[in-house]
Amino acid sequence: MEEMESGPPGRVTVYSIVGCPHCVQAKASLGGLGVPVCDVDLGKHPELRARVKQLTGRSTVPQIFFNSVHIGGNDDLQNMNPTELERLVNLVKNEPISTDGPPLPSESSAEDTEAESDRDFMCARDELANLVEDFKHGSVISNHRRGLTVHKKSFSGDQLLDWLQKEKGLAVEEAFSTGQALLQKKYMVRVHCSGNQQDDFGENLFRLLEDDPHAALNAGQTAACSPIPAAELSLILRDLILKLFSQHLSADGKFVDYKGMSANPAFDRYCDLAIQLQRVELLSLSREEKLAFFINIYNALVIHGFLRLGAPTNMWQRYKFFNYVSYLIGGEVFTLQDIENGVLRGNRKGIAQLRRPFSKTDPRLQMALPDAEPLIHFALNCGAKGCPPIKTYTPQDIDNQLRIAAEAFLENDDACVVDSGKKEVRLSQIFKWYKTDFGGTDEKLLTWVLEHMADSPKKSNLQDVVSAGKTKVSYLPYDWTSNSSH
Image 1: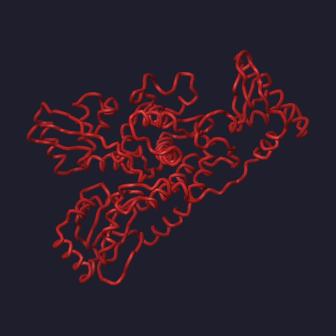
Image 2: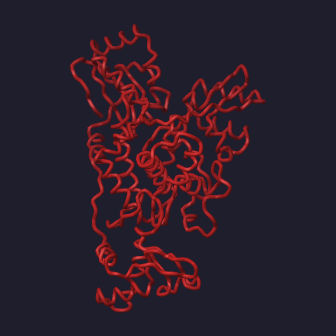
Image 3: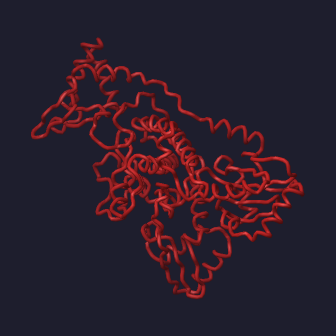
């Protein structure tokens, strides 16, 4: 919460979230009116969401109040009659706000939130990190041929065990347990199994994870810190990238200065933290932790991809971008497609995909949710103007947060338009692309939409059209325009 100006007895209250383009534009416009503006971040104060919705009937942000007068969102502010706007400004300047005005966070809540905003990652160096560093310089790693394949920068299990005994003075059993720990902690990966016998540690070939040839954006350097819980790390990464995103959002909220963002020292900090994803433990994640973790990481990875590779500008570039941009997570490479369709959609085919992301023998299949989660489509942001806004998700309240995201998305006219006269419903292309996730038929799709809309005139109109039967479903154009300012 931030008090931007003081003096007049009243105030303008804006309920927003970090990184919301419409919120940025609204606050920029309000800043020039000469009245105090109180910005309440609902991402930091979710306890106020229900009260705000009760007062406004909406789940979208921003929601703006002049004293106790609710005017709506950013579009309502931008399209307001100048005479009415002047009247409201005078109201704030001349009349104190009533005690039952729009709610603000309590002092204790604000203090708790301030402590959370200072959340940071303190690196406790892992006990095996120094050993790995010594091994890198131990003249053991080289190229090995197995059949017709040359495995570059590799070493055998026997070579590792011999080095541990000779250079580190470990007994045979201790050397073996250390080798297993290096494998289990994802410092190294198996690249070839002798006779397909993975249990034959000595004959197998391995490679240090940082030497594994892939193009993940967080690869090429060893994660030397002791792993922290995956959900906690994803929140730290998400908070940092959201702050960066917000700092480089244009005043009108329409564009992001990715070039300036990549030059920000805070981005280097983000990249250092992203390296720690390499060895996080994923198998123990609950469904809620998995949802929050992979949604947050997906949205962060899109921004990271834009900063490193630039924003895709056509269909072919978008296809390559989402199938190429990746992170090394828990010892495995996950592209954007792998996260969305492999993990969050229960290993279903994505757009223009001929097969499922994960085969039956793919170790990443263990991460896939049992079935598709339709609500994730309103939480993933692809970097285009037609995508839902970026938010941070937490395991503790993930299902409610996703429902709110869907409800807010459906309030917008670029997501759902009801034409009662033509008995037609026009929906976002998201519903066309992933129709199977919403039931697979027009009837089931409309039922799903109705169930997830907030009570409003739009919902009443949709209910009337659906009840009349023979509803035509069509799809709105999707705005693939990049939000990049370059």
